[in-house]
Image (cartoon, rainbow, N blue to C red; front, side):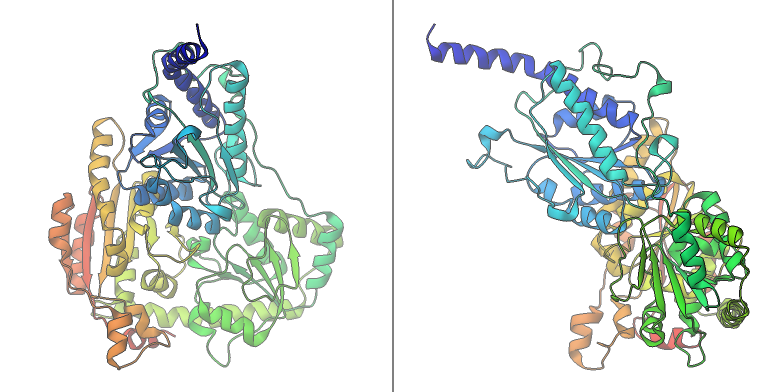
Amino acid sequence: MDGTQWANEMADRDRELRPAHTALFLSAFFDEMRRCGLRDVVISPGSRSTPLSMVALEAPLNTYIDIDERGAAFFALGLAKASGRPVAVIATSGTAVANYLPAVMEAESSRVPLVVLSSDRPLRLQGLGAPQTCDQIKIFGDAVRLFREMPEPRADAASIAFARQAAREAMAAAAGVAEGSLGSGGGSLLDAGPVQLNFPVDEPLKPDMTQPDLFKIGRVAPTERDLQPRIGGWLALGPNRARDIVRLLDGKRVVAVCGERCYTGSSGLCNLLRFAEAFQIPLLADPLSQLRQVDEALVIDNYDSFLGHDDAPVADVVIRFGRWPISKRLTQWFDRVRPLQLVVDPRESRDFTSATDVFVRTTPGGFVSALLDAQERLGAKPADAATACAAAWVAANDDAAKRIATVSDEPALHEGTVVRALVDAAPDGTLLFAGNSMAVRAIDTFLLKDDRKLPILCNRGLNGIDGTLSTAFGAAQHFDQTVLLVGDITMLHDVNALALQGEMLLRERMGHRRPSILVVCMENGGGAIFDMLPQASDEPYFERLFLTPQQVDFGPVCQGFGVPYAQATTLPEFQQACERMLGEPGISFLSAKLPLRGVRERYGKYW
């Protein structure tokens, strides 16, 4: 036998074994991902991703299909954002992977654990003009916490062990440093992020799913009891450092700015409120902080409405937990008052004002627990300055609340009455998902704190409007009722997401719950937010470049996707439609017709 014959025989043998090797290698990988906390996989179908998709579908995982790669990545982002656990998303090769970039960027900035599993051509086809082939090595650059180029699947012991180790590494990198572990029911999203694993696979692509020991091969732990490896850990604040901070705060006027993920879990909330009371520290509650679900005096929810006033309260020290809030007036207040700023975060300051004086690298929960312990050991009590400061913030907040509450007496349909009507109609436990631009700002202005469970999510990592519907529909899978508030420009950026109505119907036939999702579109026919910004003008360029008037009729669009549609031009019509559509399984669409111009005037009376 000459060398060519031998090589051909080896190639034929390898080709015959490849489907079995692929099935065993990938089943070990997905089994280990599940052991480490993976529960959900989103698949955007394609040819080269056949092995990943087929094995994932057979794994004991919750799978979703979204034919739009860009939307699929945002859908996975929403699932992860709502659950607190890493979610995997599978793409075929080429531009399909590139379509994941916007969601990966959002996941990086928002610290959401997204696990991108991209399919690729084998190395022998790279750089030779093979169809649907491009350089996918580190295609997302620094936007991912971890990139790994996987080997072509093999089923020897070393390869199977590597598949499981790669899965563990990916899940650890995605989860980051968290309060608790994935094994105990989900990450905290305090230090999470996206990762990418690139899988080169060769033909035949269809794995042999008849192999014995699928999802068991190479497993170290023999029982389910051992299947929860801990991932993550604590970053503790030592007692000496905690005492130093307590002494720093003594006698000062202190407030805490609470942004997205300023606490985790019910115990974290209790400790944060206990901390505020013990130190007499007002908590400035961004809507994404989830603190507006608590009607406590020291929860300051209306600061955006009074910080622009000349007599607004001040502070000597600001402690910042979580992401920087939505309010631009708060940023301007920082510039004007220049308090000492103490930032608490497990990774970085995220301070675009470059005004961080003290950076405490720990979790918010670890920080407040350490300071409460230090205060008790020192026997310290809040100084008169702290108590007076807290009283001033509470008084200003109460005055603003009375002013904002008058929106409920208005008969006209506008941004404020839309938010109030939605909040009044939504049952407890409803997820309120906000689009960026006008929607999240309307919620920031008009959503008053209340002892009701109305969690709020938004893609505020990069403040983008693309993928908003897909993200919301992903998050909605963890709630019985979701209300998505968007504008028409945001709607146009992700209108394909309405096709997920069909996916939810298919899943319902397979025995899965179909949640109720009400999309509320503040349809003002353009980009109304620019009417509030410095670009605002009566010159022709302003309408052409910024207001961008639209004439889309969403009624026929919804009909094409099988989505129930209603339109409201008055407040009573809107309230009646809300009552009728809330609770209906699947996606429904309610258009609230609003004027394009005059936003500043409509808001002005509440500031």
